[in-house]
Length: 429
Image (cartoon, rainbow, N blue to C red; front, side, top):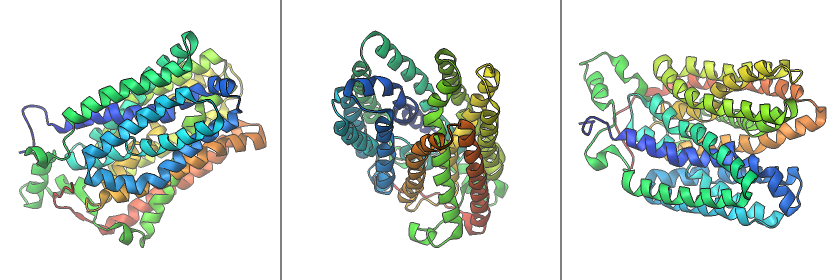
């Protein structure tokens, strides 16, 4: 059977990931820079020194990803408990930072524990629980980052304005630790088989394999059954890894530096409103993109998402004055779709490309390249801006890199097709 009562239990796993992974991404990516001005004034460092902490977060995550992927694949529940505890304690400890080196030490710890919460758990768990509606389930799992990004940004700003930034660090860390542990302990089931179920859509797949229904019903499970070592010997895998690096470089560079760009282009109030508009639009964009992947397939959907990044870059280039706020609003809405390249696209393309054997390690390797891109993309935006004193130059460079990313994705998808087979329903615990 594949259902328990009227609601398939996998949707509770999706809800869990919305909270756990969504919180980790929102606190580390979407809202981390909100603290910058307050922290640098208190401990006496420069903005560049503070922004280097984000690079340390992503570099640490890059190095840890394959190992963490293996841990989550083999010991899902205890691994999530350990990483949630470490993440929350590290985040809360940022409220006590008194010097630069302590900031950097905590950034390394935060990056390590971030790895076990953010992108890998949804990729592994949704891949176990869903065959049908995998795109929607993946997008919903990651949509929590946008919802919680709005909530956390408002709460952090309120604490800064009325109390102290350390209150935000400590209260958010404590609240997430308590609520997250309760959800993991009582909601998380490692696999459908552990509670007598099968992945959603397994009946249709079995029927397709038996010839009872059209074989197209099994296409979402046509996978490349290669080990990581075998994948390294293929050109398509390296093309995919290049695409992942550029997704992190371009996507991470834009999302982290977007608040800075908006504040440099518009007044503070308008910049804040545009940032909130982007976060709200991202909630709907992630859900929409998941549905698009289910309906249109990998190639067309990826083309739409990467094309949205190109459109965003062109719109940003066209903005020449603060009066062009309508163009800015259109740009941040379109960017909410393009920003899915590092979340929904990464997860869905991976889950529909690589077989279940060793999936955690393979997905961790994919995330390693994306995190390397994020670690280098964030300072690259600042460096390109310093070189030219123009964000238009930054967006022009990013437009070229986005086109290369699109070519790499399309090549990888095309070259992987001959290696795909109709996969048996196998779940590696």
